[in-house]
Length: 83
Image (tube, rainbow, N blue to C red; front, side, top):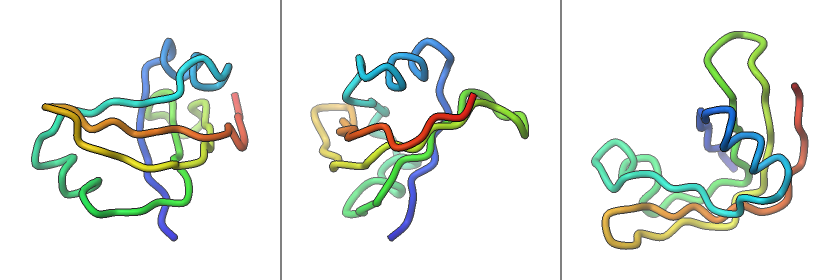
């Protein structure tokens, strides 16, 4: 199964890594609709920045739903964190 790759600011990356943030949000726009509507992923790969050695984290993907004008992505266990 495929992996969903997302980039985050440090504040949100750290909160997910610590287990304090259990949902990620994206605006309901065509770009995200194409990536999220009707798709299933095994994991989410988060990066804190775009550099080659940016902090990286793997998290379980537990589903996604459209709520109003936002996609709500439910996060599972943090599987790996590389800083």
